[in-house]
Length: 222
Image 1 (cartoon, helix red, strand yellow):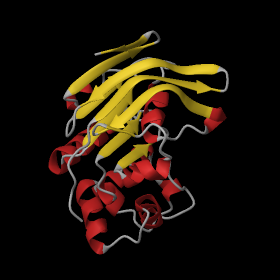
Image 2 (cartoon, helix red, strand yellow):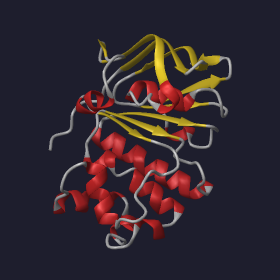
Image 3 (cartoon, helix red, strand yellow):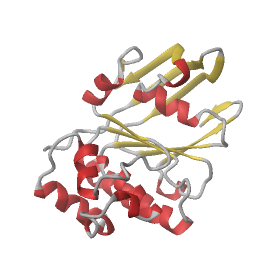
């Protein structure tokens, strides 16, 4: 499978509502292709909502984009459903390590990839995350927090995205473990050239980013 070039993203004055509540207010953001961009800000600033608006997963509590546009490489994708955005190379890794605890690591890899994984796929995962490679037959629920996060990051290897959205990867992890996972992800990004947009609450992982954007309760400041 050939790597595709990283995608450019433009969020233009996007507002998101959950029922009658405003989750994001006229947010604007430009993400250049092929680099690591990190958005930092406090809890409640709308960071997760921003990623959901880009990925299209707005169904929770009647979430919807009520104003503005999201563009991928200059094309308006605001009204597209999530599966259509996935077809354009967008992948979202949500917070809190969304894995299937009752399945083995190998089964999780297959589910996360959305297809039957090959020996080449497994080798790529083992090369990037050796700890995962040693636990292929283990139940994912027995993994450590760091190992679970690395497993959650495997779509970046197996599905070869153009735009990878990562929501608070460090949440619940020891600082050293989070730093190791972030370094592995940044190395993969440099090797494959996809666009990586991450959100975090603190500056702890900003050294891996090419561009850092601050998001406060009052909005976004580049």
